[in-house]
Image 1 (cartoon, rainbow, N blue to C red):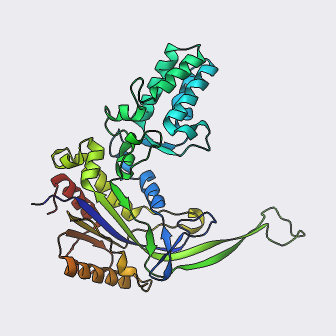
Image 2: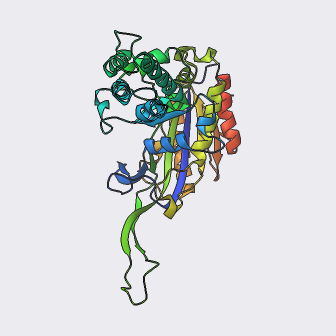
Length: 391
């Protein structure tokens, strides 16, 4: 039996009167598709909310080694600050080590906070940096130049141990945490420490043309007296949108197991896949139940998926977004029918090679998918990872 290489997750989520994801001007993000403008939710927004969700299925709780930090101030606040608090060395020495570490971790632009890009580091990597900084300070407690030179040497490929992250990655499991294993990372100062994402996330978009309005609001001053100006203390406006969104996610199983277990992707089927199965089960729950959203206090943009279709197979994945290239009515039954029709067209043209499971609050006619509830859907996805094939 052919091993399953990919899990594809298709979903429909509905949000009324919300501002899910804003652009740089404070308006809802948009995209053109099929000669119509759609409201969209960026993949970065979706991934951040799944990554940071704190509930029963939080990704970071999959393993004690899974925590990670995304920041441009890791060196200052997590590596050097504890050493300053403990008065580990003179301030000038600490400053020299901190400066060298910032450049080593964040690249040449690491000399200033503004120049650094937020970088995802696993806690084991942060602890490793802290340990090496401590060793340098112990060796050079009173000599800022010597300490700075030693810190610089730590990150030089031809001196000492070579690039820091590559050296650590060779000897540690989950160097970037579970989050890095799922969504990848880029380390500009050390390309060998880059992690290819195993979870590929498309921008979600409305199956219909954008629906928006400008919401005018005013604020009343509670301490305003009756004889004072009766006008509002503040007047403003914000955009509100409503939409039924199609979402698409692909999980590269060989890539995920490789990132989690440190094996070659080609050897994934012979590796321990229990952690990968647990992570995938959690991810399915998060995709279904965790809502991204700005303006939460004023719009409560919380929604569960109206539909989730999972496909397990070995062929290259393909989105079903073309089901909505022609905008459809913003109704669940219409969107479900369009999705089923697109899947039937693809199956007719290419044949059916995927195993499918479906969770839906509405009827879904077609796709040859067994209908289950969310718990069963997530458990099925986990079993595909454990067994390496879909049953």
